[in-house]
Amino acid sequence: MSHIKEEALASRGEGRIEWAYSMMPVVRGIGKRFSREKPLKGVRIAACLHVTSETANLMRALKEGGADIRLCASNPLSTQDEVAACLVRDCGIEVFAIWGEDRKTYYQHIQSTLEINPHLTMDDGADLIFTIHSERSDLASNVVGGTEETTTGVMRLRSMADENVLRYPVIAVNDAATKHLFDNRYGTGQSTIDGILRATNILLAGSSFVVCGYGWCGRGIAMRARGMGAKVVVCEVDPLRALEATMDGYPVMPLSEILSQGDVFVTSTGDRWVIDRQHFELMKDGAILANAGHFNVEINLEGLEALAAKKRKIRENIEEYTLEDGRRINLLGEGRLVNLAAAEGHPSMVMDMSFANQALSCEYLVREGKTLENKVYRVPQNIDQKIAELKLRSMGIKIDKLTPEQRKYLSSWKMGT
Image 1 (tube, rainbow, N blue to C red):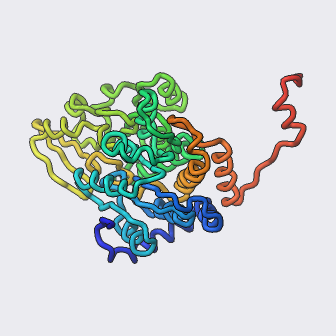
Image 2 (tube, rainbow, N blue to C red):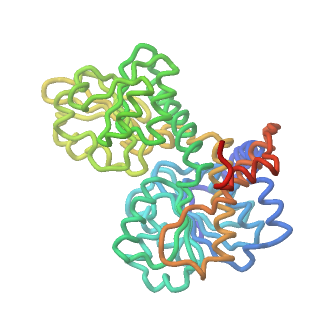
Image 3 (tube, rainbow, N blue to C red):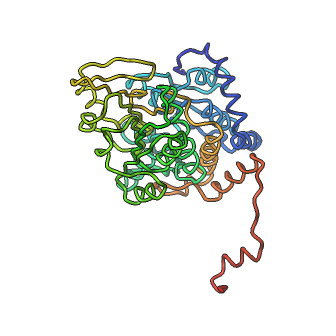
């Protein structure tokens, strides 16, 4: 039933998964508990995630808990084919994912994944949920709940909830503190720079580096670029985030004011056409464009195609667009998530917390899902707190505890000066 590139790649995937497993002590511990307790016994899970070695360890933990799983890719350029093969051959998990799959195949894989008739959906971008609501509404009544991994997906789901069209409760894993404070900031920051450097091998020191969007992902990208010596400029539409970027020490300005000077432009907003046709017309020769948002809509690719007199693949993961006046604009990873299209995604150590949230949210939904309304919920605070405690413990870090007197003081309104 699975649709992967080649099962013979499985032996290569085995080592990758094992290496990631050694870096994911929280997910490892959850998997061992799940193996004993079987909290997901008989639960069918449809998952649409980046098919990486970290995801493989999440899938294995869920299977240890008794779940029946189907997995497809949440991005055409994020699948590690050897990992997909290993999940099929060695773990008995049905996978529908091939690196570089076209749009038609991508959505066929989503449909194939949904054929499991899921009790739970697990999304990174909300494509499973969107497909159920738009094309497979026959499945909705059987779904107890879902989880959503990323900012863009949560935005889509909140819009659905606001319009009262959401058919089942969804936990916004992205909103957990142990997810967005670490995965989005440190994970995206490091892996985006990694993707840009693998694709281009440029020197960041002294370069003019423009970050569009100063959410948690943008913060991380700006931080890491500045740490490597780049002259970072932030472009924002939100006054609070613009103010924060200013007080973090970054020049903040409209995108139009930095176009002729920027060497590298990175989008991380979750919105459409952040870099548009009129921006291409003002960029300097040799400008590099990269996207760190979930969907490939942040850079107007159609507008860039229309302006180009010619286009060529100059290097793996770099497409050079030459405009009529001879200026060249270089697009990385087809405008898709550069950290996965041109690199390996987030480090396992940070995905450990994100995927711990996914696993424990699934367990929570099995237990409580039928009592929840059709809304978007945060990860329960006790789960978020527990993951932080487990991560600290795995790192050998101890912290202080409140005394009974301190707890009493913090919970009382009667004790002042």
